[in-house]
Image 1 (cartoon, rainbow, N blue to C red):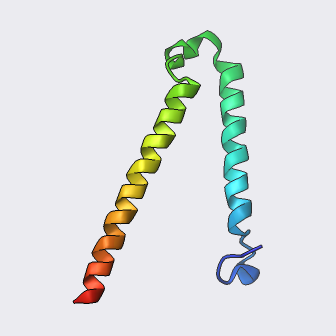
Image 2 (tube, rainbow, N blue to C red):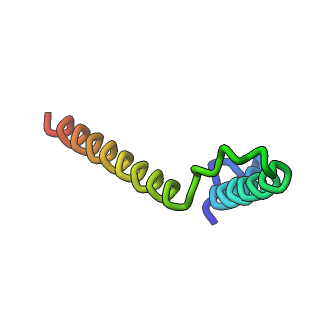
Length: 80
């Protein structure tokens, strides 16, 4: 696995391990929140699979457009 710079010296975990740890931590947080919250979390009922999917698609489109704009801007700067 690819490690961060100087990670052997500092003992820092690789990037893939960090992403996996954050994902597992978020899943555990959601499970614990769901178990402990009960009826108090009724205001979160608008969060559905469809809404999350829409959020992911919109976020991806925004990131894509930003990357295209920066790519075009960088390419334009190289010509000058």
